[in-house]
Length: 322
Image (cartoon, rainbow, N blue to C red):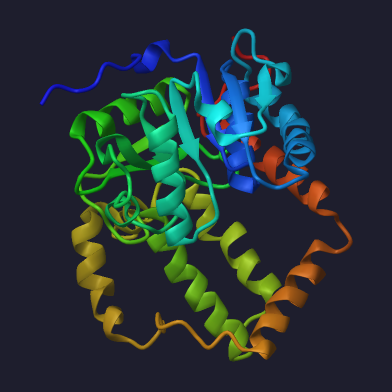
């Protein structure tokens, strides 16, 4: 069957963002910074005010990243209905809360309201598209486009289709994200939690175990990454980092030398019980780490830090470079 006629990824000018929370709002900011016209909808009564505050807070970082010609917050339109938001869209990004039935119902509504052929992407961080596309009349255009928080700052997006997704829709979405300035992993199969979240989850579970057992504080855990392996991971991933641990022998020598330690009981990847004691310890530890800084303060600090790393590693031009 031939693919539905759709705007080429390079020619898209109007995108719709459905769901305008932290992730959806981050997508809105990203697309605005890349020069797109954006229509947005969210059912919350104060959604527009919150969204415009988020875009305003993100704009200094977007300016440092480099705005596309014509980029402006004025190109955002917040609509009163879902149908209005997607009526003229050439691409749709859905970012509703992580509730499977909600995702199924919303994607079916988006499929019914969005012009034929337009690709609809879900920002889900864990659900496979196969499970989310069951109620849609045209499931072939539904694809996962999983970003990382905040989407306007972190380049990575993971793309994966479901069992009923058309392969050309997957290819279209990957190319569109590349045109929109993202770093894309196109997955050839569905993996629960995708790739990066699976790795993050392993680290998160071990961190919770350490707090629960009194082995490390929240501050210790964060510092162990920011002052340790996180510095290496900003340049290359864990696999190449471990390969370098093998010296001239590379990964083979590393595995020969350190492989036996895999049988040592260092980690406990089963999640600990998130009881009130552990919950309170993690929350209070983060409050202590914030040390009076507001969320806005921390967002600005994070954004400046990530941009500095991107510049330092050659992913962005340094100040003064041509």
